[in-house]
Each structure stands twice: as C-alpha cells, then as structure tokens.
Image (cartoon, rainbow, N blue to C red):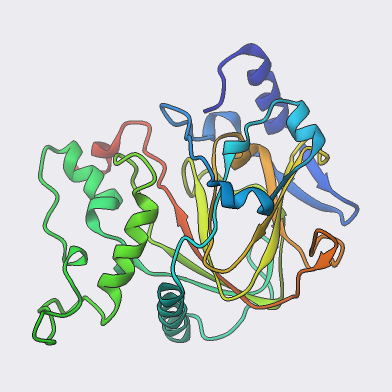
Length: 302
C-alpha cells in the first residue's frame, strides 16, 4: 500500500508530474495521476517460496532504498506438466478463434509482434465484478456452472452448454491463483497474451484506469527475462527469470512506480551469464478490477 507520509506523497506527485525517458530509445511513459492510482485497504503481502530465490535479482539500489522484496511474487512450477499442456492447448484454441494473426503494434506502441484475447468463460461469477455487485446489493451470488465438473461421471456433458470440454478444469487451476488474494477482490476476465519469439514489450507503466492493485501472469511455452525499473531511477530494478509453469505478480509500489518490460536485447536476455533463448511465450494474465469511488453498488442502473 502506498504510504500516506509526506515523503511518499511528494514522491508520487513527482511521479505524476513528469515524463520518463527509458534508456536512449526515446520512448516515453505517462505516469498515472496520483488520484487515479488504486490503493488497497491493506498492503498486498505475497511471499515467494524459497525455490524462487535463484530466479529473482534485486539491484543494490533497490535494497538500499528499502523497497520490499514481496512486491514481486514468483512461484515456480505453479502448475504441473499435465496442467501446462492442457492450458497451452486451450489457449491456442482460443487464440485461433479470436486472434488468429500476430499484430505488429499495439495502440499504445508498447508491445510488438503479439496476439491477445480475453476469456470470460474462465472467470467464475463469484470472482468477478458481478459477484461483488450482487454482494453489495445484499443478494446471493447466482450458482455458476464454472464450479461444476466438465463431464458427469457417465462421461456425458454436465448439461451446461456454456462449459467447454476443459473449462471446468481450467477454472479449478485459475481458482488457485485468485485464492492467493482477499476474497473481496473482483477480477477481470483472464487475458491470453501470445508474444512471438521476435516480439517484445517495451518499458511502460500500466494505465490505472483499466485495472486495480495487482497484475500477474501464468507463464506458458517459453522462458523470458522480465525487468522492472523505478520510474525515477532505473538503477532501482528487479530482474526476474520467468520459466514455463511459473506464476508471477507485481503488487504495491512496483505496480505503478516501476516500469516493466520483456526485451529482445541480448544483454538483458541472459541469466547468470547464460543466454535465454528467444522463444514464443504465452502468458495467461490476471488483473483485478478497480472498485468505483462510490462502491460496487454504484454500477447498478437506477
């Protein structure tokens, strides 16, 4: 959670007042306006397992300035080999139907050579904005087919036409992700991002209008090095080796005070002196929804 002390307040005001130029490539990142930055009631506190230690590198400046290691969460082998295979297969099916071609540029010019789509069928109502609105209205959350198995014991359809063959199993896996966070969070539909082996994500800070406190991804297919740099001091940085089957989240100060990127630069695509091969990568992305200033109930039409 962002501190309300005067020092932190001034830092955020500086962050929102100017442009940041990354490296020498002339790219610019517009900082979120201080009033727009979502703030959780309590700091998000996720602790990476010990197995993640070799996969995260904090710069000396990051540690000296007192930033929290827990603002980056990495869980290697979050899914099994079998779950990984099933997720890749179903992500590719969705992409083939909804985003068959790679795009060379994004509207904000931050990502190149990619394709993407959202999958609302993988989000249970109890985890979605609709669930929070129902609770705010004092109404029970409707029974949701996402909590049912894909197939009945006799091998026939469970009877829900909206449930695909593997959707129930996928929701069960994704519920482990959402279960890491407070139950009052409202989640946006999972987002599939397929980055070509020649694709890249340039340094940027997410627009706070489109999501809330956290963003993360379940890493599939290929490895990459993701870099996070403070918007006012690029030497304050974290580098993370994201392997297939791993889960990561960026929270608290790293969410909006650090840029994040996945580069094609060979110098940054290395780990412990060994090159990380350029390869296609699918990330199943998770973002929470930003609660309206007047609460979830305000979304209900009068």
